[in-house]
Every structure is written in structure tokens, then in C-alpha cells.
Length: 276
Image (cartoon, rainbow, N blue to C red; front, side, top):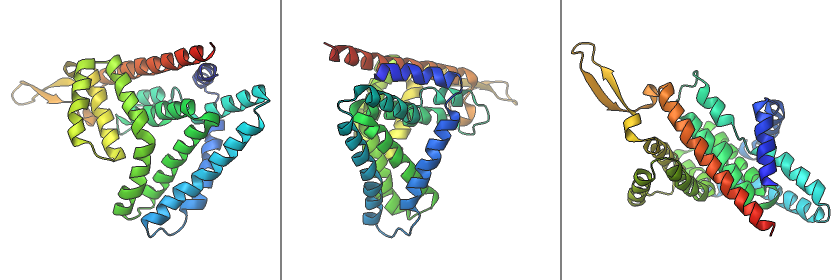
């Protein structure tokens, strides 16, 4: 079912047929989240309860639906496909990579992880889209809280940790697939080095992902040369966000595309194995 859902979603996205329905889904998701976040937050305990009370109804409702539809597999499969289409965005990151108006040239890498890889991972691991929807809830709640400018310490101790715990396993798997899709030796070496700097923070995962992607495309490809206007000498520098050229973007898109294909290939093998 997962493979069929992936193919169907890809086709619909290529024809731009999902924008409106996903906009409606996110609108109501934000309204739902607003019931929990539009209140004064004064403690870490209150913040943790927000995540719990927001996620629990979704978990219970979807689990009950699964139990009720155990003898109606066709209806259950159609519902799962519908939820997959809403929660897993296969090609959004590629469209963002082509958008020259985006100020942060690396934002599509985060989009790749948050809207494609991690939701797909949790959709496959947990039944009835419980994983993907709960992950999106955590992301949405954290974004709302960040926008409210709540106490930074409370945010870092709770909100940042919540995204971290929801992301750390799929991100670790993503790092492995990026290594396979790019410079395996260099990426592996960098990941092992980061063990000494490991911190329980989503910022750490995000920064590590950005660095790993650049390493995966090969250092020679993101060491650019700039001619000094006064000396006419070529100065080498490490790629920064403001120097993200279309060529570099193309290299990264290629690595991420191969990473996604490897992951989907593994899912395909698992689905085939379950048939026997």
C-alpha cells in the first residue's frame, strides 16, 4: 500500500492537484493546534501537557478507526492513502529548491526532512497515519510556540526536545542513506566525529543534516573561487548560504533524490517480503 500511495502522491503533485486540499488540511491543523497554544504558558509542565493533550485525541481516534475497519480492508486502505496524501509531501522540497526567491538557500534540505522523509518514516512505522500526523502536530505546535516568543529556556528544554525526540531516529537513518547516496567515507567519518558533540537538540540535528549534505556532494564541489577585484587573484572559500549557486543546488538535489529512492527501495522490499 505504501508504494502505491507514494506513486499516487508523486503523480498528483507533479500535476499540482494537491495544493488546495493540503492547504485546507494545514488550515484546520493550525486551528486545532491553536486551541492548545493560544493560552498563557508559564511552565515546562504546561508545555508538555500541550503536546500530550494535542496528540492523544489523534492517536485514540485513528487507533479506534483501525479497529473498526479491521474487517473492511478496502475502506481502511483508501483512508490510509488519503491520509498519506495529506501528510507526506514527496516533491515539495524539489519545487522549493528551484525557487530563486527563497532567502535561505538551504531551506529545501529542511523541507526534505520535515515534510518528506520523517513523515514517510513514521507513516510506515506506525499504523493508520498515527506517526505522520502526530509528527506534524509536534512540528506545528513548536512553530506556534516559537512565534509566540515564549521564554527561550522553556522552549529549548521542552519544545526543542520534543521535535528532537520525534526526529532523532529518522534523521539518523536519513544520515545513513545520504552517506550511501553521496561520499560514504567522508559522511561516515563526519558522523562519527559528531558523536563527541552530540546534544539532545533539534538544532543539532538540523545543522548536522545541512553539513552532511554538503559533505555528501564532495568538498571539491562546494569550494568555490571568487576573483578579488583589486588583485585579480582567485580566493577559495567554503560555501555559505549566500553563495549557494544553481550548480551546487543541482548537486544537492541529485544526492537527496538518490537518498529518497534508496529509502523507497527499502520500503518496497519490506512490502514485498510481507507478501510471503
